[in-house]
Image (cartoon, rainbow, N blue to C red; front, side, top):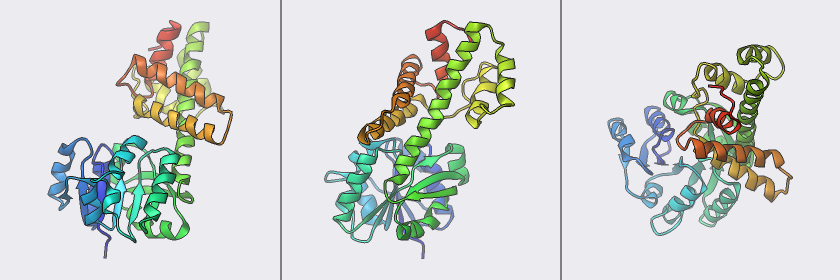
Length: 296
């Protein structure tokens, strides 16, 4: 019999995840974190609503979190109405938030004291793939826990990577996002360098596309950018800045020198100040404005 799923965070990603879980036979009790309107069409599928994280935990066997970051996880976990107050021995929590490893370790310990277990399973891809059940996830969990939760993750994920014990998922995601955002920042500077030195941007893109410097990120960002469209990488600057901040905290805790991470974080902060509602592609516009080199 399918586990009863408690879901906290019916947002851009969470809506599709909860929908797919219900359509594939899982009973779902949900709570919106910020926008309750996203729950409305899920009621017709049989999703039940409660008003607090504690009630979500009390109604379910497996609790899935999908909120913005570590402060939001802390807010819904702790206190009289937090889900920890409703957790019972034997329950499982799956944290799909891109969170801080320090929060993951704290939550794992506090759940263990109640006889419950934690897996971290941050996500990749976009709300489009969430709706179609084709997300990617990188899972941190012991082998036995991973085996238990894999069928649940298969309800909304196409590619499931078991990357280690609890905590490894969030660490992997932060390093992955550093690599992604680092490429985006380097691409933005390279395009500015082309403009400043008179290199034709379209011809430069052809050279890169045929060589070893080519990448999926380059192809997502540059062809559209050359047409004046900075939406090729559908990831908000606010989330990118948050993830690079978490990455720099991670490298500091090792410790690792991490100069490149700090540089990428600074580039994202600059872009965020110039385009508060922008996507990652806006680093191109920010570099262009700061260097007075028209690109788009």
